[in-house]
Amino acid sequence: MRVGLMVGEGSGAAPELQGLIERGRLAERSGLDTAWIANIALDAMTASAALGAMTSRIEIGTAVVPTFTRHPVAMAQQATSTQMACSGRFSLGIGLAHKFMVEAMWGLSYEKPAQQMRAYLEILQPLMQGKAVTHKNEQFDVKLAAMPEGTETSLLIAALGPMMLKLAGQLTAGTITWATGFETLENHTIPSITSAAEQVGRPLPRIVAGFPVLLTKNKREAFDLVTKVFAVYAGVPSYRAMLDREGAGGIEDIALIGDEAELAPQVDRLESIGVTDLLVMPFETVPGEVERTVEYLAGR
Image: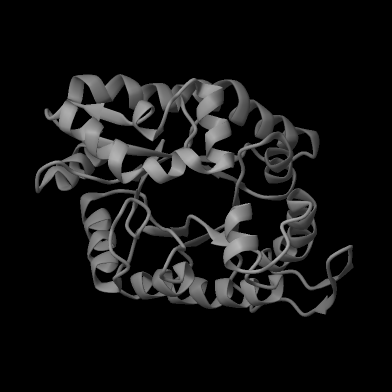
């Protein structure tokens, strides 16, 4: 199982590019596999390109870029440019975002989101595979030349519910999850996406599972901090549905917190149920805990 670190704003970091680059370089120096970047205040692909120029080995991925704010052609062009900046180490994670963001913040319609995503993927996926696209569906009517040679990019989507997991399995390389616990991953997420991939003859999907993770002896303080830092997610309907499926009150109830003896079986279980990538959402109760957590996970 690969291990990656959220190096951007996803776990409370300030929207500041230099700090993001420093955390990405820490992930690379420590031997982690991937540096993930959220699309919140900073544009995730611009930040990925900047990090790509300052690293040499580590994969860089977005988790995730919203589809509603970019036409698939614009998404493909920026992803291609980012892939060049990352020297072939970039993976594009995209998602629908959330109804309250799309409608209340951006002033767009969130009607039939799964249908919108399928229409979007029908354009974007072949472009990311280096193919020209002539295609018409209910959302788009395009006649597009192929992206530049050598810029093919792995495409993942944030998928939680059954319809999105089916799309992820049929049309992409895998999914990125959040607010999704062990039981839900094992009995809902992984079987659903794997079955969808098998039905169309695609390879086993990549499962990138996001969790707050901390190697610490300060368990009570860590639990309280996770409750505070990640409280907002428990009120987002799509995340709330996953937490309810798990029987969890909030993100704190599924966080991976403890010493080596406590973390090891949790990380091992994720791998045993089919998670291919652990996406670590970092936090710390005292300075230095993030670095120690990264070193521990990289050295397993």
